[in-house]
Image (cartoon, rainbow, N blue to C red; front, side):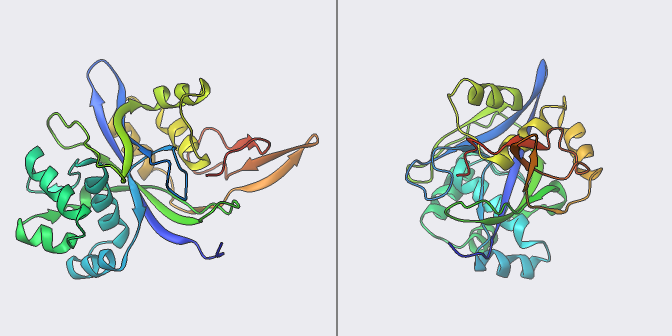
Length: 246
């Protein structure tokens, strides 16, 4: 494994509920994947050269491009695209991306733009665990587009996708029905504190975005994976023993 972290981006898509906490768009990674196989995660992936080229051309962060592209590719939910995209058009975008058509060309042909203002940076995770691959991932949060969006997945990209509250995902893991990597678990605990997208966005704006590289601390003979206490996460330690690192 190289010590150099791979630049990546993740998008936390939030859908408000009239009678409960907001729901989050979660995907289950395919079991054949080298990193976090079978884990429930937010849509996302590495930033590729084409993302950087498109970002430079339209004047936004390459991580924002990657976050939007990966979300469409994995779920066919067109977050932060303008003007509004219909479900059928979103499905066409998804299939074109799976076929390796450049995202920039797809947007130009359909006269679409990325609304970078719709994406709010939430956190930046740079774990140094001895995993198969190490990523430097910028997490964004965004509101789900208006309408009823049922995520669609394509075999090989994800094993599944669904809308779940943060508490539901955490409860699934407690019951042994889901697997979570450390950054996802900490992020879900933070999101579970809030009752709306606007609360989540205010939380994101209210905390600085600094690289989070968990470290090991020993206390009373036990080792704990630890993160800074001032970045908005309600749980900042977890026992190292038994920690799944993807």
